[in-house]
Amino acid sequence: MLTAERDQILRIAVHDLDDADREVIVMKIFAGLTFDAVGEILYQSAKTVATRYRRALMKLEERLRGQL
Amino acid sequence: MTDSQVENLLRQMPLAEPSAALDDKVEAFMRASEPLCVSAVRRLSSWGGTSVVAAACLVIGLFVGHIFGPAFATNDRISQGNGEPVVGANLSSQMLDGGHGEHTSKTVVTVDWTRDRVSGPQMQGPRVAMFCAIGGKNFVTSKEQQCLRCHDGITVAETDFRREHMNSPGFETCMWCHDTSVRREVRN
Image 1 (cartoon, one colour):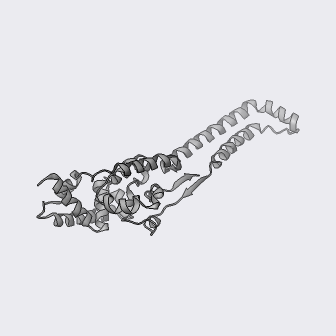
Image 2 (cartoon, each protein chain N blue to C red; image 1 turned 120 degrees about the vertical axis):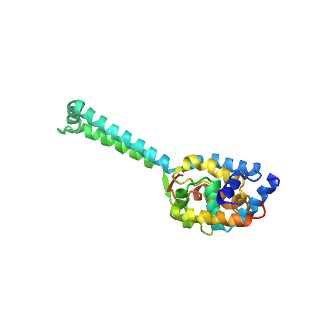
Image 3 (tube, chains in turn cyan, yellow; image 1 turned 45 degrees about the vertical axis):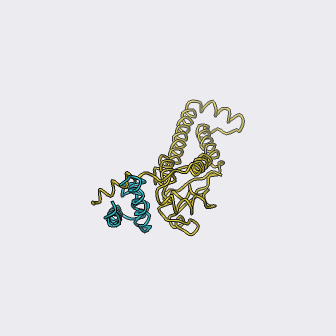
């Protein structure tokens, strides 16, 4: 699979997440924030954010399964 | 595929095609807005500096008052007929008052941007789009990297954020609203 094709699939998968899932993914991975920092922004504990993040990753994983 | 594999793929995913026009717009705005925004860090440092200067003035004033008090007191007595040698204290308080007056003359307005306000109807778009400049307490250092990272075009920025926010009339306020947890001082 071409890299560009893979990236496009990833982008679509991220975009298809709901806002709540996407925001933790974006803040953690793209903005490079720690769970503590994300928690501060969202008024949630780092533990809650970490859980949300893992759930979001799992959703992404499901969406990407069979495509990559 | 494991979680870490998904993470790695996401980290490798390049940002979407950059928009030179948009970048120019962001950079122009940042240049224009630089003097308007005083971050919490800068505010603290300026208050710290002011306090140090005020304390130094106080010490110097007391010292000068102690050394030259009698001479000034003589002048006081001549001009005012007052026998109390309180010139040192007057000197220091004048200095403090002078510093205070200079500070307030800059018309500093403190603006509180709460998360509710940021997420309010005047700011359309996903919440995540509002964190490009947040960096929380590290606003000064993170402002440009954080903002341009998103504005350069991750998927969210490329679609909803760019269309709904960057091109909206509310763009001028983005650098306030993006920082949701820090009180900001704005000089008029």
